[in-house]
Length: 193
Image (cartoon, rainbow, N blue to C red; front, side, top):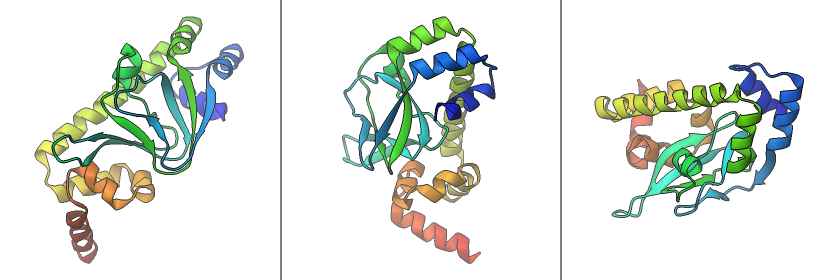
């Protein structure tokens, strides 16, 4: 299982066998059942989480409407962490919950800092991960501000086909900022054309 994380790291940073063994020491496996919470609003995110298998959603409960607003999804080989809460060890403002049975590799905050001291080249790997995450957030903001719902949905299908296969449509609708009914009508229109 840790081989999957090492393979992900190796796309950006080459590790020697001693460093690979250290990865094995720092990261621990965690299994979650469907519907389990990895993190709840108000808790401190104590772990960085690499998704080995399964699907999670990060969401915020809108205090005015009481509705769940999806921030992101995490599938195999992705990360599911509240970065600000993890880095600053302060309370999270959102939730992370499994959509299906999920296997994670986790590292606690203090162990993460120690791992970076012992394997300094991992700083580069996590910088690349954060840059990719920031780029995807910027892209999402731009698309939400410039594209209509249909084009946002088509872009979602194109860029996240694995998520589209695994995640219920009502959650995709929340991610896109539309109602499930509107998404259903849009899907029928797209299929008809």
